[in-house]
Length: 291
Image 1 (cartoon, rainbow, N blue to C red):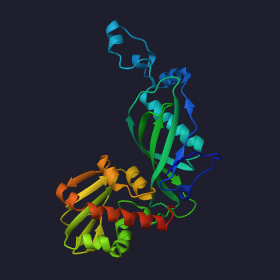
Image 2: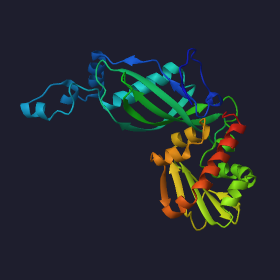
Image 3: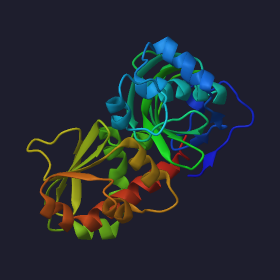
Image 4: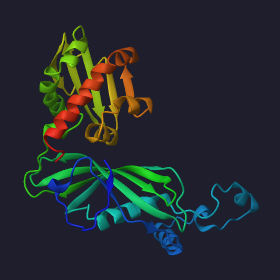
């Protein structure tokens, strides 16, 4: 899906967030005042940020060509981007943030933020839901500076319901795929002689498909004897794969976007089965128009 810039910022409730949708911020230039103020606020006045050194050895050992912003500055301005885009909605709480620091942020860099909705989860409390986001910060040269994931609790207008077809990696999702797979002659032919279990993991969610002679007899969070192999990827990868324009599973696999636990031989033998599973997931997701 293409990134989208919002022109009219609106308050967004749980129901308004569209799974797989990507939002692009307006660029923001980093100023000398940003570095000075963030240094004072954080108390992190390490020479790599201030440029001050005690000895010539310190100068020679410096990793960066000029003073860099503190790593946490990226997370801080991400929350500002979210606010300006109106994507925090009637937010109730920030739940977690997992972050990678890939390249330095310098004064005078122009930074933009790309935010993709990767999961929507209802909670046990009525009128609330959880939104998962994949975040990328880039500079003026399109270099990825930082990236990570962030989840937050947000209000819903009504019941925070999510169709099972969009709950990637869960047992409910697996059960929703079974009718599609039962009607797929290529899939049933591919597992005609298979007696085993295939696992799929999307982030922290995992589902096991118990297969027996051309049929899936169960889709559950765990199978009794475990999976022959489990194919896993982060939520962002699954969201792009299932809601993207094409089934590019093989290309993503060759790029190393998936991990495999268990029998590598069984995984390779079941490649066609996995492609048909993805096709079923894509068809099921489109039934609900990714809402």
